[in-house]
Amino acid sequence: MEPISSLSRPYVYTFVKGASGTEQVQVAFTNLGAEPVEADWYPAEWASATAAGARARILIGPGGTVPLTDGTYLMWVRVTGAVEQPVLRCGPIPIT
Image (cartoon, rainbow, N blue to C red; front, side):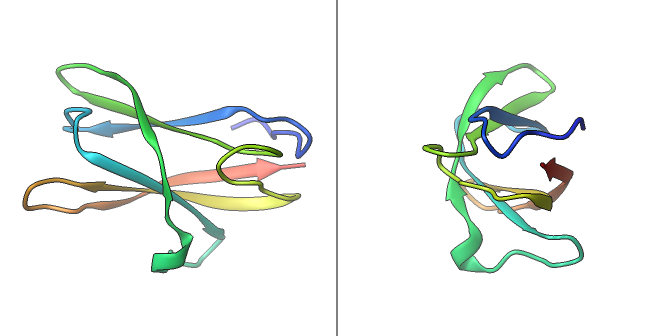
């Protein structure tokens, strides 16, 4: 992913294979090499759904859901279904 300015407020997206887009979805950002703890999770939303899965999104930056400062973060997504609750590592998000 291209670096994102810490001054901007964009949505960041991640595709979740097998999601219907109706489940509860949350996103966390951690330091590289760390796993999220309960306090790291923020509510996210579904942007679109297909037969293969759905795209989750969250607004980051000043005035967004998660104000990230300069650094590289690991993005995680947690989907809560009726029985399952997968936690998926999405990849690094560089903020400059």
